[in-house]
Image 1 (cartoon, helix red, strand yellow):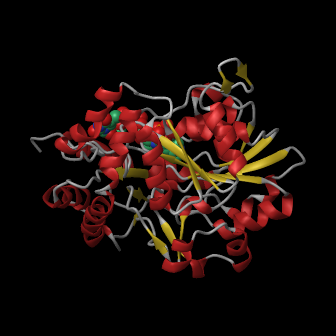
Image 2 (cartoon, protein in one colour):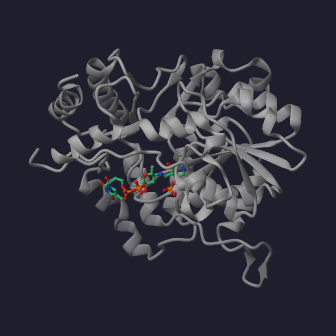
Image 3 (cartoon, protein in one colour):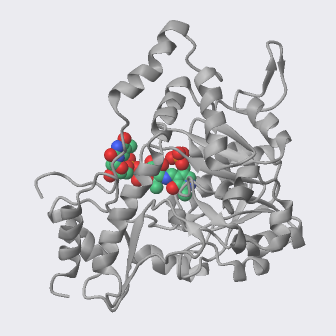
Length: 389
Ligand code: T4K
């Protein structure tokens, strides 16, 4: 391949759209600290995600870190090690102890049958991850959290814009959700409505981006008020600071990019679907390859295309990685190593405690996927994978 193919490539709105959007910023000279673009983007996002409230942030990581702080958690937090560094770091940077639960072998989200055995009197919350946009078992997590009085913060960084059919959600939980009229009308629920809060990333590499950026969604207005202060150092007024906050604000240029990209998001998701369909046509039902399941009742955003190369496939994950690299195609081993195996946590956790997560991380490869990826390139990638199989 002459051209280098990377695992992803940000979708860019037409340049003229962005220039028109940021023009007023030169005139107003108001560049950050919750300006007009920020307000408008927040409003449009609440509509798009169909959630009661959005708090915009500088990135997904700070959205999680700040939200965990706002909830004033203590002690232990049950989460999974099969994720990006951010999820675990955000817990640790809040002075909390991550307790790693294994993932289920079908879609690599938290194994809800193993959560309860990890709960102790120190447990204050669960931080599940909708990994690759695969929705966790939100019904089971709701039941466990209610029974043990735990907070739930979903890392939904991969799940932007996803929706689930009402019929898939247990009746009792639906009654607790502060659903907006649009939700009921469309008979689907935006993924940001589950738990006490959900966190999204708008990093350049995501389905939807604001250069860098992120957000928390929630229904309790008090969370929004505290986030609003804490993302700006805890400043209440010129002379009053009431909270050990940080600087986690989204600036006006990020918000402007968000407003531009929001116009194209449905088309973006549609193109991703076409590309995933092309991969699936060739890789589905091949012995030794495991693709993500199509989740019943979930309106996917087609965020990633991971393949697990089992031992009975003709090539190992690392061989496929190398073969593709020789052809100028750069896949990624998301998510290897497990966060519990990171050098910075050396000796604290044992990856053997989460054997399914460890196995998946040692066998998974995320293949290139973005809206403008040519279908021919996908065919070539599949050819290289399947050659001599
Ligand atoms: N929770 C989860 C589950 C997450 O996956 C993430 C982020 C977070 C929380 C935290 O959200 P943020 O704080 O990041 O908003 C990338 C992204 O930087 C990261 O946002 C993402 N997850 C993670 C899965 O992927 P790296 O270390 O792989 O990034 P990098 O620079 O190697 O880029 C990946 C590929 O994208 C490269 O092949 C090049 C291409 N690329 C990258 C950039 C930055 C571009 O084509 N253009 C670009 O501007 O982490």
